[in-house]
Length: 279
Ligand code: 13P
Ligand code: ZN
Ligand code: NA
Image (cartoon, rainbow, N blue to C red; front, side, top):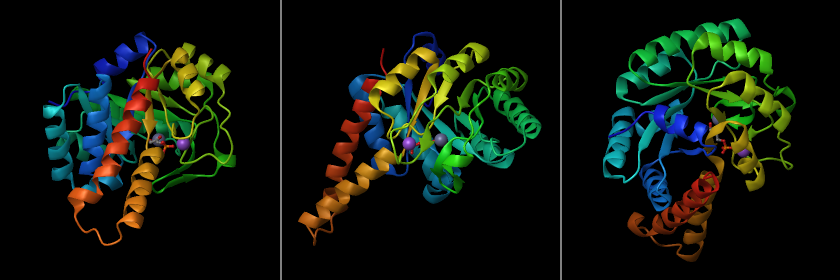
């Protein structure tokens, strides 16, 4: 069965490793993520934004994730990524998501708190853990677009208050990562991350991990990062493989053939990412 993210994140947090959370957009990607996780033997998080489950359609989304979890030799969770409203979160809770993020990071501090509290109350009543964000993580994620100049870092004292009063199970700080590609090498604020780690005492989530150098990802594991989100690198590789396939085989029409190299290379990428998150 699908499991929640509670136990896996707490174990990772306690033992200085992290769980890979991968943007899951279709059957091929879901199967590749699970296969990659099985190769390492590590728990894994399938995550979707609301626009992804609207694209896949909710009943299919749930059936795919449930089937994947039943077949898998590792624990699998289905997580809502960047849930943009109370209503969206409720939709996912009703459907059977086992973990949710409420993203009120664009709201004023007090409003963000009120929204997150409300979500925690509803989700926790169903034993579903909640992730929330404070500060703004730069870059583009679906309809959410934050120019890097407008991205601002999480303030540790605010983070402490936010985590305490909302009762969230995991926290996504802004400490220099960004969604999508980086124009230059990202400068992660490890001092800040360390302060946030000390002041919050819950598993931390790294967003925007595509493009973050391995040594930086590994370093962050010492400062409470217990969930690492990857999306862009998977999408890039999948599309790249399809383009290459059709360049070599311009008349191929069989999905059972043209998806295969894309799926195989995604399995390797996921395996490599999860490997990098181990102790
Ligand atoms: P990337 O697309 O940069 O990997 O970010 C993923 C993410 O943070 C999803 O929430
Ligand atoms: Zn994100
Ligand atoms: Na990124």
